[in-house]
Length: 220
Image 1 (cartoon, rainbow, N blue to C red):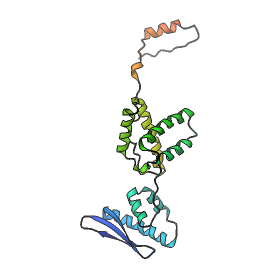
Image 2: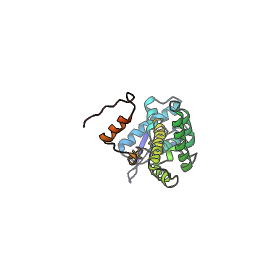
Image 3: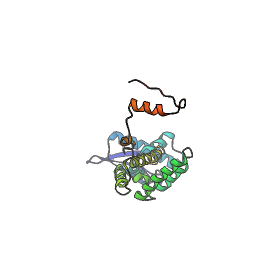
Image 4: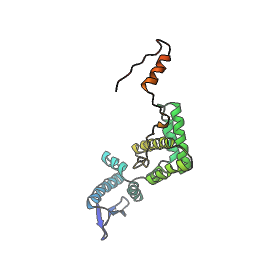
């Protein structure tokens, strides 16, 4: 059985007797009693599974995929779970691109441009979990200042980066998508638009070979 210890400053910790007979402590920091009770129950289940060499139940396995890295590290330090490995940027993105056999070759090239920008800025071995929303903001600005990309190209690459990290999030490799809030909607270039009046349009149609073009006008 595990127990909850509360310090005067509101911090809580969980203590339990491990299979080797030694008492282990997991410090939760400032946490409510409800949260501490929930973690305590999971710690007991994990400890029993360790002692009896049994597989943890499905509910506990799902819980482990949802906890943040800090708690996962504390559980790993006391031997309840293996150390959580973080996927590396280049390896993950390369794997994502390789698995996208459903997209056109031109799209793969576009993916490659975004991959290059991510790796050049963060480095090949950057753990995905260490990339924060602030890092994503800085990367976007780097695309503007360093790469000298147009506004729409920046938006496209932000959208693809968001797509990469959404896949990582769905695979539970990261807790949240650092690129989720980046603006990625491409804006139409209205500077090249030209309004053609009905009169001018009729002149064009009148100049076309008979029978080759059909038109239909719609009154407003």
